Length: 179
Image 1 (cartoon, rainbow, N blue to C red):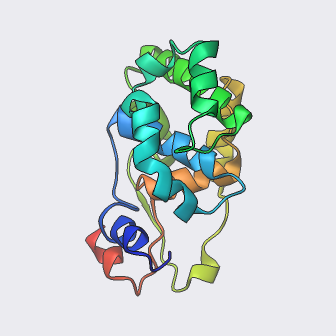
Image 2 (image 1 turned 90 degrees about the horizontal axis):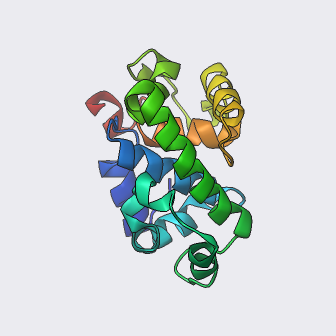
């Protein structure tokens, strides 16, 4: 996962830990989408700036963003200034609110793709870890059907790994059994 102090801390404390908080789930969905075409290190370095720029990833606030807010974000050097990614974040916040109304929480909706509990894989090497799975394909298809963007199968699988829906630490990693 990298050897920068930030990447090590992220791996050792956060990556793969099951998340059930709607705001944090939305944060990871946004950040994984922001990563498209970039490295996770780039996104992780900008994470605190994203939290400031996007009102701590509160979907209800972001859903109310207007063109002026989008322009502010596109001028912010602390985030990835990609028009499509910024627009997707605002759009996705609106769709998350709809999912919360429909399911009671984003957590309840999103965890259904793994039956409500983490899938614990038994990969011995990083090379065995897939880019997508049937579950991430299903998640992506359903999210896109509901109008979300930057939620392709690979982004969805990275999201699933980050929020602990799957345990893809290798069996040799000290975090594997802890999770």
